Amino acid sequence: MTYHVTIVGGGLAGSEAALDLANRGIAVRLLEMRPQRQTPVHHTDGLAELVCSNSLKSTKPDSAAGLLKQELTALGSPLMKAAQECAVAAGGALAVDRLLFSRAITAQIEGHPLIELVREEARDVGSLASGTDALVLASGPLTSDALSSSLMGLTGRHALAFYDAAAPVVMADSIDFEKVFRQSRYEEAASGGDYLNAPFTKEEYERFVDELLGAERVIAKDFETRELFQACQPIEEIARSGRDAPRFGSLKPVGLTDPRTGRRPWAALQLRAEDACGQSYNLVGFQTNLTFPEQRRVFRMIPGLEQAEFARYGVMHRNTFIDAPRLLDARGRLRTPQAAALGVPVYVAGQLAGTEGYCEAIRSGLHVAVAVTADLQGVELPALPPETVYGALMAYATDEATADYQPMHVNFGIMRPLDPPVRNKRERYGAYAVRADAALVGYRRALEAAGLMA
Image (cartoon, rainbow, N blue to C red; front, side):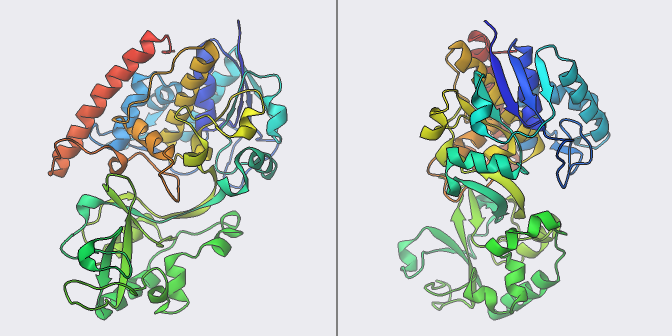
């Protein structure tokens, strides 16, 4: 029996899913709206076009990005193989000739006997589900207005976002706990609380605001600013409206007592745990449009964050994505009643699912392809190990306890803690890598036993 799967979007996730499924003998209909309808950021009509940097980040085996590449290679990712074949010199990173990479993927898809490439805009989810055995939505951060409107029928209006306004996240072990204190507002400091607080003196605050106002910002395109800044003000724009404005907003000190002085600080940043194990912390209310190097420089002026290691920098840009913790299961499948009513399983992959980054999008497409194959063939899908970097990302993205969800890269801040803990950072990252490698070997064997390795 030949199964038929419809995929929307010819980016990294959609292209990976299409090739992986077709290589498994499953017929694919891949819809890509370019060149019929262009986006503000694409320059060609090629599939898997890299629209920003040509770097796929680090290849170091003891980095989260490097471990993700090892996962993709071990699981036979077609796009990772093409990236390695199109690589250009980039030191310890994997970078590609973006034009050659896109051409290689486009040629593979156009030449595959089981893939039908359709150049038209997908507008209605209901019609897409008709006549297919499964539907994969991988339309990316610039999903068209028509498809977004239709998708709202499956997710609900408030579970579909149209922009990223994410505050930075720092690793817990890079915070100076001699300078910050734990307390929720209007609670006794000694009783603890849900937040860490970084207290400013007046002089520290004034120096911080000076640098914040002078810092280099990302140049926003018109399509990014139409609705973005109406909904959420960057911290630097708040400061631009008045030097004391942050003290009445994100940096307000009311209800807090610095145990070192016994008084309310002049200003205070609150940090909230980003994961259940408290390995990373979110800078509450610090949405920003500063460049990444400037975030690192300026935000390290915050007391207690002088040596901060960033698990995620703040971003503000157009980015359509769903509230994955409320909507997706571990397979990447929509679990709403509206989706079930379509009569075919609906999966979401790539940035639309809330994964951030090139290799994360590729891995998302591969994961969904494996899940679709298992579901169509009635095979039990092996559980994705949370000890792997992508397994940790999926666990985070599909955990209903994950509040205020924002797209995330793979990083060690969302990994399960080591038992026993390892204090030295280099040794800890090496231990994460050893544990991840072992989990990946077991996962691959489980896929092979289930007949799910392409």
